[in-house]
Image (cartoon, rainbow, N blue to C red):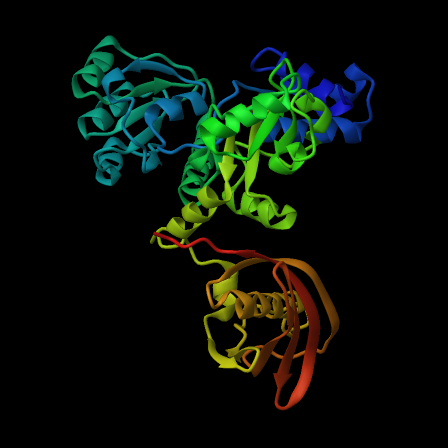
Length: 435
């Protein structure tokens, strides 16, 4: 095991609620503070720990990082709460919460049915919130009166108690809401992958590969060892010159490209284009759990691109004031760069200009819908300062194109003067036809 894996395993075995610090971890395990810091950040990404303002980093229950629906059951787990009543409403979805630090009459004015009201040890306010149709969360670890619990059960409105203070609860719920919203905008490999895939072991033979091919018509299979750990991929190319008795472990391609179930689909598509593969094994830890194909990825991304909830990307912000025109061997964009794309000197940010050139080059290749493309190399020769809101022209011309690569010349012109020039190369992947 690596040092990082050893530290993560140590953190995983800590009791829930244990406070963790970089210095304390370094001293306990006799490692550098840099190693401890990286391990804590990795543990946070794995939802092993959480950092709470004014509290610090603590060990917590490992939970799914993303939520399809932010239900009260999920909220209870987020704040590590206890359900006092209203169990019948735990599957309801939380959309809005408010802090009841006001008089009861004022509080009720702001409540709409389905809200969550965060309160302290105020039984009269708890009862009023429930009668107004809101769920109630009691901070400070307090219990409440029996008749309030009965009211929550009768109305099927969750009544939850948590030991955290109001500020911490609001912070945790806000974070959960943001993650829930992010989940709705981003697709992950787990959303489209094939579970329980057909695979081979290192001890099977080429004869077994041929039998599988006859049954499935697939030409490539992930290879696992005796513990189910992904160790390779075997394809028709690997078996072409092998004898029937050769072991798969001796002819497979080792150290294959793979993704996890929490990898974004867009990154999986990038890997497929970069490594020119059509299937990626999916792992959890190091164990094989599924497969994702290029067709799965492209169909899902094509579907998501048409959904109304996808927010405007930064590329869309830059291009919103530009008009596109087809030119020989490429495209031309003409327009103004938004005034918010400026640097500390009041001129257009060089990053914005580079993104403008880069995206223009990608569009010149992908506009005919035959290819998807990712940047292989982007070389900027020069960039001159220019003020925002100036009319510029961006020319993206294809110099060379083959089955897998394309080269383009990019230039930006303002008032007949060349203010930026770049050369870029792209890796190409033919798109599948959408049915």
